[in-house]
Amino acid sequence: MCMTLEDIIVEAGEDFEGRLGISVKNLETGDAASLNGGELFPTASVFKVPVIVELYRQVDAGRMNLD
Image 1: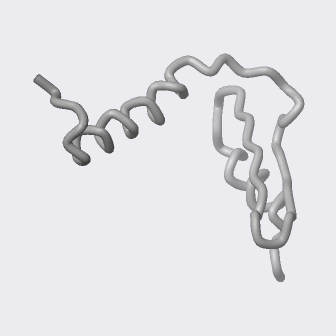
Image 2: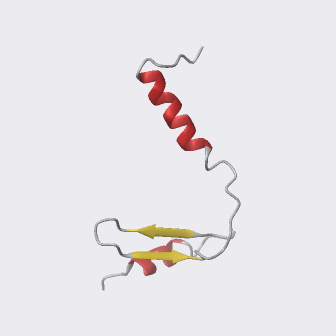
């Protein structure tokens, strides 16, 4: 049996004991699915990840120094 995208994310969250929200989209096909996608969740440290990635890209390019 072939699982749909929605089936996969629902199954992934079955054993999670907290409040879970997942939204995914296949950029090639446009298929999308979500689990609690309409709920609001605090972003906490989510924004730190792209900032630190860019920091290290700048260091690798020689434009910044970690010292």
